Image 1 (cartoon, rainbow, N blue to C red):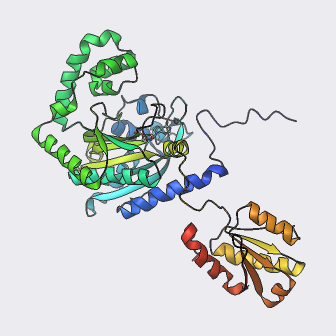
Image 2 (cartoon, rainbow, N blue to C red; image 1 turned 120 degrees about the horizontal axis):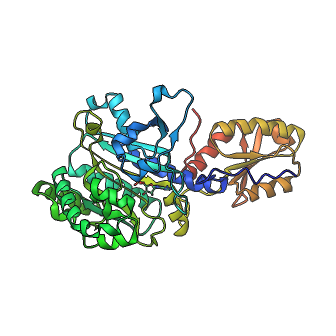
Image 3 (cartoon, rainbow, N blue to C red; image 1 turned 90 degrees about the vertical axis):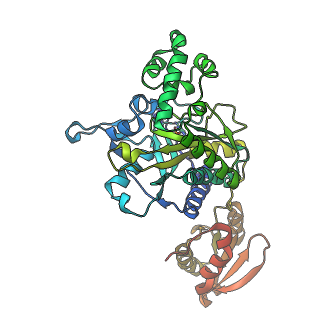
Length: 437
Ligand code: AMP
């Protein structure tokens, strides 16, 4: 046999196997349903954008851009303008807002995206080169209520997904002026420690000392513990804004923890910044998501458009669900109906019935090659079918079938033409299947 060990996923990439799909489907459905009831509309933005979009918005000094951007090479390089795989959604959503004139819509515009993002990270548990993010943005609102709404949205999703010990770590960076003051204080504070700083942190000390506050280097993290805090640099308006955000969060019942170390890795934030963490996390997986207030539309040359957004890391949520042994909140049987035939004529009829049931959106299996009732009932049981539909010679002749509830064993005669409707009605509450139009 030929050696196939060479055919593996590329480094940092992974398959999501059928056994994990129900959990993923449930999580995707939850984020989409909750985003919709919170008033967000879905937007799909391309996986590939011009790389300078990410450079301009996320900041060329961040890890995401300086180390982790997947630059795409193409034969026709658009006159040398490099393209890259998106490392997050916010930049693409902002570009779409500008490009499609969404500034002239009633504001704020609430948008969400869901899909893969790519970071050329060092792979480890909970850190992949391709991962899935849910990203929600409120564009065109400068109110503290919008910040609270976004934070509450993520909190609700995490709760609904069954995670029990979620906390919001929250901080305020204040206005640009507050950040400048903080940067000055931080530079003065870290300068005496500059010999301890590695090459990256040395650069940060000059370009963006705020980032030293979330340095991964344990020696610097220790120094950072006593560093000046952004909350001490807030001006009156920034203080008022932040205290409004917190009081709205209190009203929504969101549990938060004031955390001066949260500065977020990206350049574009001001005022509120936050992360969702698990109290039980051992620090291995990091946060489940995070976000903050920004004006990227303005930064990209558009009219000032204060915005607030957040992203949830779906892969980490699913890992956390597994650790916390969260039951999947949908019916786990992957088979609604199993169709059983008992003769040649029954088989032809079964195939006809199968088509109508599939059109109704119900997961339905049938084995054309099996013949014994016992064998087929066993198969139906094995796949967890909720109903079996039995069609023998007589049933086929009369355009009827026997509908068997697999749990109770109760059987009833049903006209084939009514079957899809009956099954749909009985199953829809449990599964949320949609009837085909
Ligand atoms: P960020 O934009 O870096 O704040 O990422 C938002 C969320 O995405 C994080 O809180 C993580 O849950 C998740 N995330 C970020 N990077 C990765 C990665 N390399 N692999 C898996 N999940 C990630």
